[in-house]
Image 1: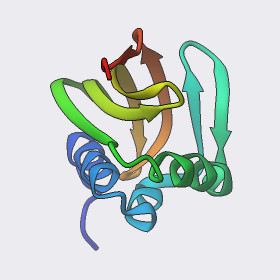
Image 2: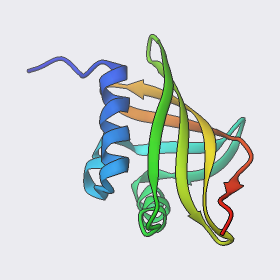
Image 3: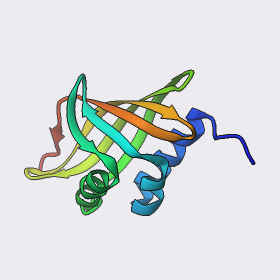
Image 4: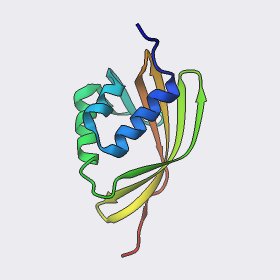
Length: 123
């Protein structure tokens, strides 16, 4: 039996699956009962079904792409600073996010999002 992946490797796999829009690979990285929050405590998804719904909608955006600006690892906690290109209702743009992941037994158990201001590109 192999040892669980290091938290940084788990989060990198999640990041890669997100950019590949590989929903099944992404969901396999989250615990079945994983929780996602808008920091500090607004629950936005709990469990595989709600995560699937959330990411399915996001993956429909034609401009979706995350760029990793910085990563900090402390034990089972991984903090990513990202710039995400998205398709907002107002049009294409980007937003900076801080994502905080708690990894347990080789899977993401909890995630928190801190979103900066969105910037819509000029037409």
